Image (tube, rainbow, N blue to C red):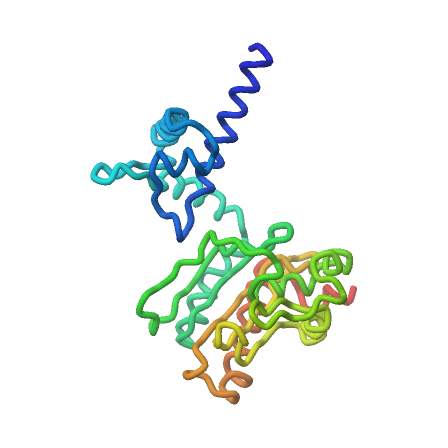
Length: 259
């Protein structure tokens, strides 16, 4: 294959993959024109790329509107990826038991570089409209789960992501180095309530056999259902216990960190 052909082929792959990245909660379906504009190609090129993705089941075309959305083939691929995570396999039942015991929504997020990816969820029976976070990615400076995971990262990573002079922004509730230090000392993160969402939230670390924090179990509940006593004496201990059980299933033992 000539160098020019190889380059064009690589460019086509890059463009096709970038199209898949255009779909999210705000853009569940896209037209050919919208894809062309976002990727920066002619409509005919966008149409060819979409046709190729559709042929492999990665996207599908709505026959009435002519718009494209993600295809079912991605579900199979995602399932193969999720099956690689022992924390999900061992944690699924534990998440369900925690949800059933407390009646609140529980998430399992795993560390992926400087991000957290949610790989499982057990939704509260009180939720009228469920929002599925499985597959959703956040940076470690977003949300409670990310902040909890960030707290247990090496000091160099914490310093890189959270400068010492970075104050907590009320509108985003960014973590500070002081809060992350408190999380490490306490062993978990809890906000009663979270100043941004108004929810009460708890995130507890999941460790593997080498003691590293590799995931987190996060419980969220509306403040009107939880008073301080229930938060401190029921929700926090139950969430910590669930995280400890998942950690044990991954080979972690309480005395391992001291050795």
